[in-house]
Image (cartoon, rainbow, N blue to C red; front, side, top):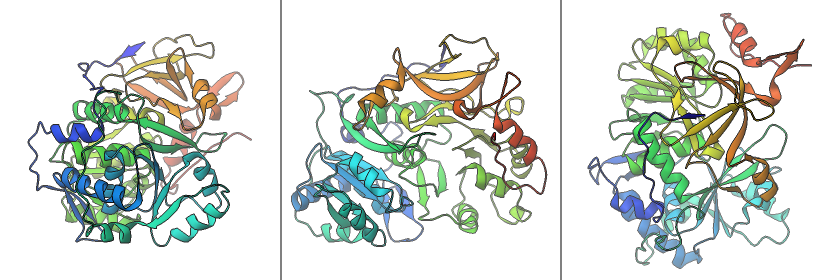
Length: 456
């Protein structure tokens, strides 16, 4: 078993996320510090203090206008925006369950999500409301109310409702009180609703402050384009802006020029990306024309970044920390965090605070250092169940350890290396070959932009 070398953290068990935010500000972030801006709506901004007092007012207005109560599930089906964050915090503040659905989900897929969510209300972008309405008609028995996100929040600004305090979990505890549902797609099943408790969110937020302080602090500045409805959005935007006062400029939709130019314009010191975009940056012959001299950390998530691309990025961003991490929706995102180390190029790093890991063979026996095996995890940030999926929850754990289905190895220095998904390993003459290794070879060619390998 491998345990984090970072000091163990105390995670409060008797407060909601909202209660925690009212009392927590160890870095003395000014209340008027802008932490969220909208690239599409430049006038819409949210401050560090606003995440607290504006959220309390909006929560009161939502309760008065629509009768939303603790335990009610509220869907948000919209692109990235400050309005998205306003609603998210308000729902969790009042004790509702925030159900996040990616705006890219089609109307044909939506009925499955609605069946899991069992929501009372849905807030959606105007252009997405017809899709949700069509999906609702395919969901017999559902009485969910669909509301246009931006217009509804604008209307509620004039609501006379009084601010309300955050849900009080001092007596019931926060470990089994659901705050948020994110959807996780397996390799062989429909998406599952991962229920994250207030305790899970606090564990992730506090662990990130200790484990990745350079990107989880009030000095961090970035342009963010991945969907807020994804786990990446939770760890990079929802929690750091509210807890640590990080600044984020939100992109409603990704464009390569918009991301690069925006990062240069706001003098971003953090860039979060995914492999496909990292490849574009690494192979962009014009990247030197942009002033990205403030960037100190480039983080890639979502899949393994090939070593050849890491090398190219090191050439583009001389002296910049280029890291990868490892996490999944079921762990409230990150359990392994990257380090700046040339010798460990391609590694997904070492353990985040409060995390424990085992690498095991098919019989669940731990394997020797350097040997590939399945990753099992224990951490306060690990989810407690799937929404409406008791059997799936039971099947995901073994003796209290989350079985990830991912194949990793660890070296003698405690650095972990992601190899591939267990179900995607290629077996050849008795050997297990990770497709990622073959993809890395292909990507070394200058004419190859992306590569995917599978057995036939």
